Length: 105
Image 1 (cartoon, rainbow, N blue to C red):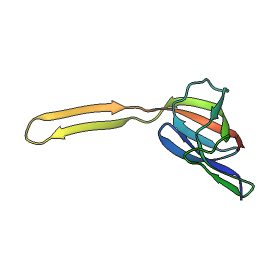
Image 2: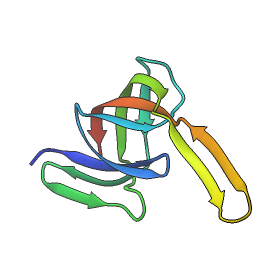
Image 3: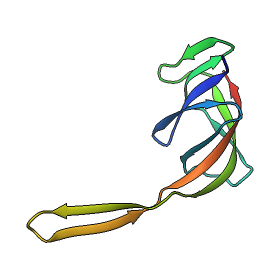
Image 4: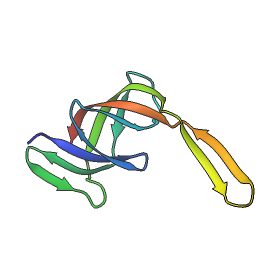
């Protein structure tokens, strides 16, 4: 069984492994920078599972910023029947791609 961790960032939780690339909500930093995620909810290292309450104390995930960008546009359309009310709005969420380099407990 390979080592993994569950981290919380941007209001979502992600299951990450070393060497894996994940797409998260935008984080500050440029391409090539190192980011440390300290909000680790669970770790499994060498078959030893640690579950946090709510976080695992002393655990962290180190990742490298691979790139940043904007996601595809989604259309937000509000409509109320019989009142001539219509609103159309677009939204593009910004993201950061991270490559996990190390999981420590």
